[in-house]
Image 1 (cartoon, helix red, strand yellow):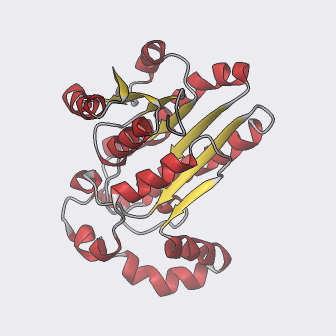
Image 2 (cartoon, rainbow, N blue to C red):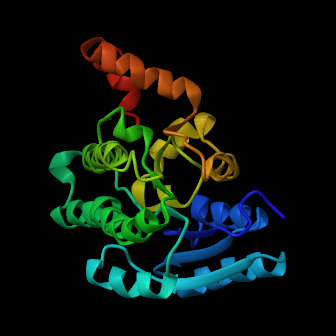
Length: 258
Protein backbone atom coordinates (compact mmCIF):
# COMPACT_ATOMS: atom_id res chain seq x y z
CA UNK A 1 0.00 0.00 0.00
CA UNK A 2 1.67 3.20 -1.19
CA UNK A 3 0.86 6.83 -0.57
CA UNK A 4 -1.05 7.07 -3.88
CA UNK A 5 -3.00 3.82 -3.57
CA UNK A 6 -6.45 4.20 -5.11
CA UNK A 7 -5.54 7.34 -7.06
CA UNK A 8 -5.96 7.48 -10.83
CA UNK A 9 -3.26 9.57 -12.52
CA UNK A 10 -3.20 10.70 -16.15
CA UNK A 11 0.25 11.67 -17.42
CA UNK A 12 0.72 13.12 -20.91
CA UNK A 13 4.02 12.92 -22.76
CA UNK A 14 4.79 9.72 -20.86
CA UNK A 15 6.72 7.80 -23.52
CA UNK A 16 10.12 8.82 -22.15
CA UNK A 17 12.05 11.29 -20.01
CA UNK A 18 10.45 12.55 -16.81
CA UNK A 19 7.02 11.42 -18.05
CA UNK A 20 8.17 7.80 -18.02
CA UNK A 21 9.94 8.23 -14.68
CA UNK A 22 6.88 9.83 -13.05
CA UNK A 23 4.66 7.04 -14.36
CA UNK A 24 6.87 4.33 -12.88
CA UNK A 25 7.27 6.08 -9.52
CA UNK A 26 3.53 6.82 -9.21
CA UNK A 27 2.73 3.18 -9.96
CA UNK A 28 5.23 2.11 -7.30
CA UNK A 29 3.27 4.30 -4.87
CA UNK A 30 0.11 2.33 -5.67
CA UNK A 31 -1.50 4.61 -8.25
CA UNK A 32 -3.43 3.44 -11.29
CA UNK A 33 -1.52 5.19 -14.06
CA UNK A 34 -2.89 6.19 -17.47
CA UNK A 35 -0.14 7.24 -19.85
CA UNK A 36 -0.51 9.18 -23.10
CA UNK A 37 1.82 10.10 -25.94
CA UNK A 38 1.99 9.94 -29.72
CA UNK A 39 4.14 6.82 -29.95
CA UNK A 40 2.24 3.69 -28.96
CA UNK A 41 5.31 1.47 -29.14
CA UNK A 42 7.09 3.63 -26.57
CA UNK A 43 4.01 3.68 -24.32
CA UNK A 44 3.78 -0.09 -24.57
CA UNK A 45 7.36 -0.39 -23.36
CA UNK A 46 6.63 1.84 -20.36
CA UNK A 47 3.46 -0.09 -19.58
CA UNK A 48 5.31 -3.40 -19.67
CA UNK A 49 7.92 -2.04 -17.27
CA UNK A 50 5.22 -0.89 -14.84
CA UNK A 51 3.19 -4.09 -15.08
CA UNK A 52 6.25 -6.31 -14.62
CA UNK A 53 6.91 -4.47 -11.35
CA UNK A 54 3.38 -5.19 -10.16
CA UNK A 55 1.86 -1.83 -11.04
CA UNK A 56 -1.33 -0.90 -12.89
CA UNK A 57 -1.04 0.99 -16.17
CA UNK A 58 -3.27 1.83 -19.14
CA UNK A 59 -2.38 3.37 -22.50
CA UNK A 60 -4.20 6.09 -24.42
CA UNK A 61 -2.57 7.31 -27.62
CA UNK A 62 -2.73 11.09 -27.87
CA UNK A 63 -1.00 13.90 -29.70
CA UNK A 64 -2.07 16.86 -27.54
CA UNK A 65 -1.59 19.24 -30.47
CA UNK A 66 -4.63 17.60 -32.08
CA UNK A 67 -7.20 19.34 -29.91
CA UNK A 68 -10.14 17.54 -31.49
CA UNK A 69 -8.66 14.22 -30.34
CA UNK A 70 -8.53 15.17 -26.66
CA UNK A 71 -12.28 14.51 -26.19
CA UNK A 72 -11.78 10.95 -27.45
CA UNK A 73 -8.74 10.44 -25.25
CA UNK A 74 -10.56 11.63 -22.12
CA UNK A 75 -13.45 9.27 -22.80
CA UNK A 76 -10.90 6.45 -22.74
CA UNK A 77 -9.09 7.81 -19.68
CA UNK A 78 -12.15 8.54 -17.55
CA UNK A 79 -12.22 10.48 -14.25
CA UNK A 80 -8.83 11.04 -12.65
CA UNK A 81 -7.56 12.31 -9.32
CA UNK A 82 -4.40 13.83 -10.80
CA UNK A 83 -3.57 15.21 -14.23
CA UNK A 84 0.09 15.78 -15.08
CA UNK A 85 0.43 17.94 -18.19
CA UNK A 86 3.92 16.85 -19.16
CA UNK A 87 3.80 16.80 -22.98
CA UNK A 88 5.96 19.53 -24.46
CA UNK A 89 8.93 20.35 -26.65
CA UNK A 90 11.18 23.23 -27.60
CA UNK A 91 13.43 24.39 -30.41
CA UNK A 92 16.33 26.76 -29.74
CA UNK A 93 16.72 29.38 -32.48
CA UNK A 94 17.09 33.10 -32.88
CA UNK A 95 13.68 34.66 -33.53
CA UNK A 96 14.67 35.64 -37.07
CA UNK A 97 15.66 32.04 -37.83
CA UNK A 98 12.71 30.29 -36.17
CA UNK A 99 10.13 28.86 -38.52
CA UNK A 100 6.46 29.79 -38.23
CA UNK A 101 5.62 26.08 -38.27
CA UNK A 102 7.78 25.40 -35.22
CA UNK A 103 6.30 28.42 -33.47
CA UNK A 104 2.75 27.17 -34.04
CA UNK A 105 3.66 23.60 -33.02
CA UNK A 106 5.26 24.72 -29.76
CA UNK A 107 2.17 26.64 -28.72
CA UNK A 108 -0.17 23.87 -29.86
CA UNK A 109 1.63 21.31 -27.68
CA UNK A 110 2.99 23.37 -24.78
CA UNK A 111 0.00 25.68 -24.27
CA UNK A 112 -3.20 24.83 -26.12
CA UNK A 113 -2.95 21.08 -25.60
CA UNK A 114 -2.20 21.59 -21.91
CA UNK A 115 -5.19 23.89 -21.49
CA UNK A 116 -7.50 21.55 -23.40
CA UNK A 117 -6.54 18.53 -21.26
CA UNK A 118 -7.00 20.61 -18.12
CA UNK A 119 -10.48 21.72 -19.19
CA UNK A 120 -11.52 18.07 -19.60
CA UNK A 121 -10.70 17.04 -16.03
CA UNK A 122 -11.97 20.07 -14.09
CA UNK A 123 -15.76 19.41 -14.12
CA UNK A 124 -15.51 15.91 -12.66
CA UNK A 125 -12.87 16.97 -10.13
CA UNK A 126 -15.19 19.75 -9.02
CA UNK A 127 -18.05 17.29 -8.55
CA UNK A 128 -15.88 15.19 -6.23
CA UNK A 129 -14.45 18.25 -4.48
CA UNK A 130 -10.86 17.23 -4.94
CA UNK A 131 -8.14 16.85 -7.54
CA UNK A 132 -4.67 17.93 -8.51
CA UNK A 133 -3.48 19.50 -11.76
CA UNK A 134 0.29 19.53 -12.25
CA UNK A 135 1.68 21.54 -15.14
CA UNK A 136 5.27 20.98 -16.22
CA UNK A 137 6.55 24.46 -17.04
CA UNK A 138 10.22 25.51 -16.97
CA UNK A 139 12.70 27.93 -15.50
CA UNK A 140 12.61 29.29 -19.07
CA UNK A 141 9.15 30.59 -18.19
CA UNK A 142 10.70 32.72 -15.47
CA UNK A 143 14.01 33.67 -17.05
CA UNK A 144 13.71 34.39 -20.77
CA UNK A 145 16.95 33.68 -22.58
CA UNK A 146 18.32 34.37 -26.07
CA UNK A 147 17.65 31.69 -28.70
CA UNK A 148 14.64 30.38 -26.79
CA UNK A 149 12.23 33.29 -27.15
CA UNK A 150 9.35 31.21 -28.50
CA UNK A 151 9.88 28.32 -26.10
CA UNK A 152 10.16 30.78 -23.19
CA UNK A 153 6.99 32.52 -24.35
CA UNK A 154 5.11 29.22 -24.34
CA UNK A 155 6.27 28.46 -20.79
CA UNK A 156 5.44 32.00 -19.65
CA UNK A 157 1.94 31.20 -20.93
CA UNK A 158 1.83 27.98 -18.91
CA UNK A 159 2.80 29.85 -15.73
CA UNK A 160 0.25 32.61 -16.36
CA UNK A 161 -2.49 30.08 -17.06
CA UNK A 162 -1.62 28.02 -13.98
CA UNK A 163 -1.53 31.03 -11.65
CA UNK A 164 -4.93 32.22 -12.85
CA UNK A 165 -6.38 28.71 -12.68
CA UNK A 166 -5.15 28.26 -9.12
CA UNK A 167 -7.14 31.29 -8.01
CA UNK A 168 -10.22 30.20 -9.95
CA UNK A 169 -10.16 26.79 -8.25
CA UNK A 170 -9.18 27.98 -4.78
CA UNK A 171 -12.50 26.95 -3.20
CA UNK A 172 -13.01 23.76 -5.20
CA UNK A 173 -10.61 21.38 -3.47
CA UNK A 174 -8.51 21.19 -6.67
CA UNK A 175 -4.84 22.04 -6.26
CA UNK A 176 -2.66 23.46 -9.05
CA UNK A 177 1.10 22.96 -9.06
CA UNK A 178 3.65 24.22 -11.56
CA UNK A 179 6.99 22.47 -12.01
CA UNK A 180 9.82 24.72 -13.15
CA UNK A 181 12.97 22.72 -13.80
CA UNK A 182 16.18 23.87 -15.39
CA UNK A 183 17.77 21.68 -18.10
CA UNK A 184 17.13 17.95 -17.62
CA UNK A 185 19.19 15.14 -19.11
CA UNK A 186 16.52 13.72 -21.46
CA UNK A 187 15.83 13.38 -25.19
CA UNK A 188 14.28 16.89 -25.10
CA UNK A 189 17.54 18.31 -26.43
CA UNK A 190 17.60 16.01 -29.45
CA UNK A 191 15.07 18.41 -30.97
CA UNK A 192 15.72 21.58 -28.97
CA UNK A 193 19.50 21.71 -29.35
CA UNK A 194 20.25 20.54 -32.87
CA UNK A 195 23.82 21.87 -32.77
CA UNK A 196 24.64 20.21 -29.47
CA UNK A 197 26.28 23.42 -28.23
CA UNK A 198 23.78 24.10 -25.44
CA UNK A 199 24.06 20.61 -23.95
CA UNK A 200 27.85 20.85 -24.05
CA UNK A 201 27.80 24.21 -22.27
CA UNK A 202 25.29 23.29 -19.54
CA UNK A 203 26.21 19.64 -19.01
CA UNK A 204 27.58 20.45 -15.54
CA UNK A 205 24.17 21.74 -14.37
CA UNK A 206 21.90 19.12 -15.95
CA UNK A 207 19.25 17.70 -13.62
CA UNK A 208 18.58 13.98 -13.59
CA UNK A 209 15.14 12.86 -14.77
CA UNK A 210 14.88 10.64 -11.68
CA UNK A 211 15.35 13.60 -9.33
CA UNK A 212 12.76 15.78 -11.05
CA UNK A 213 10.24 12.94 -11.31
CA UNK A 214 10.72 12.08 -7.64
CA UNK A 215 10.03 15.66 -6.58
CA UNK A 216 6.84 15.76 -8.65
CA UNK A 217 5.49 12.44 -7.42
CA UNK A 218 6.22 13.34 -3.79
CA UNK A 219 4.11 16.51 -4.26
CA UNK A 220 1.07 14.69 -5.70
CA UNK A 221 -2.15 15.35 -3.77
CA UNK A 222 -0.49 18.10 -1.72
CA UNK A 223 -1.02 21.87 -1.77
CA UNK A 224 2.44 22.52 -3.19
CA UNK A 225 2.27 25.69 -5.30
CA UNK A 226 5.53 25.39 -7.24
CA UNK A 227 8.46 23.04 -7.59
CA UNK A 228 11.60 24.92 -8.67
CA UNK A 229 14.76 23.05 -9.61
CA UNK A 230 17.62 23.63 -9.08
CA UNK A 231 17.31 25.99 -6.13
CA UNK A 232 20.13 28.29 -7.22
CA UNK A 233 18.48 28.81 -10.61
CA UNK A 234 15.22 29.76 -8.94
CA UNK A 235 17.15 32.28 -6.85
CA UNK A 236 18.39 33.68 -10.17
CA UNK A 237 14.83 34.08 -11.41
CA UNK A 238 13.93 36.08 -8.30
CA UNK A 239 16.98 38.28 -8.84
CA UNK A 240 15.86 38.74 -12.45
CA UNK A 241 12.44 39.95 -11.30
CA UNK A 242 14.00 42.47 -8.93
CA UNK A 243 16.81 43.75 -11.17
CA UNK A 244 15.98 42.81 -14.77
CA UNK A 245 18.28 45.33 -16.45
CA UNK A 246 21.33 44.41 -14.39
CA UNK A 247 20.61 40.69 -14.72
CA UNK A 248 20.28 40.85 -18.51
CA UNK A 249 23.43 42.94 -18.84
CA UNK A 250 25.50 40.67 -16.61
CA UNK A 251 24.18 37.30 -17.80
CA UNK A 252 23.55 37.89 -21.51
CA UNK A 253 26.79 36.33 -22.75
CA UNK A 254 26.37 33.25 -20.57
CA UNK A 255 22.77 32.83 -21.69
CA UNK A 256 23.75 33.09 -25.37
CA UNK A 257 25.63 29.78 -25.12
CA UNK A 258 23.09 27.74 -27.06
